[in-house]
View 1 (tube, rainbow over the protein chains, first blue to last red):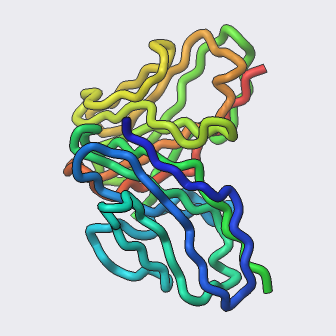
View 2: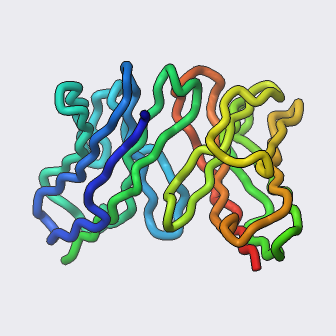
Length: 111
Length: 113
């Protein structure tokens, strides 16, 4: 079964602290992994995708196929990073533009 | 470039009624996907349309249906509303290739009384 697990509902850190939002997936095949973010009163938007291998707003995520994980990391959190973060996967067997989302993790960065 | 628009933004209905939600994709985007977001179940895929054809469907009852028009605008319909259908319904558009970035609309908040 295709599944995305985000074990933490809430992650609370202080400004300048490192952040790691965990994501594990279950998929038989080669999925494509994404991180979407939703800031307060804004739309859900793509933060990054594993095939791009790029850093967006200081965030990076590496796909670990052995551990079936795609954790999101940032070395120094900023207050503006406070938002809801969703890990999602899409795969060939799921077809086209079907995203399977995790439950989401709320990141709260305190001054 | 204008973003994805959804109408109406808020809707209140009673059990047993039906409802139609509308989504206008970004110009040039021919794929439109619909998602249901609830506190209990999170974000769940409903269906995807491309070139007026449904090409993927999630695990929702037949009361949930949709369609896409030749201009790529899409509608979803929910018949015989139940209390559990109360949710935020999100529409996303993307270019037609597989696994392209999806651009989300603001959502329609449906409340069923």
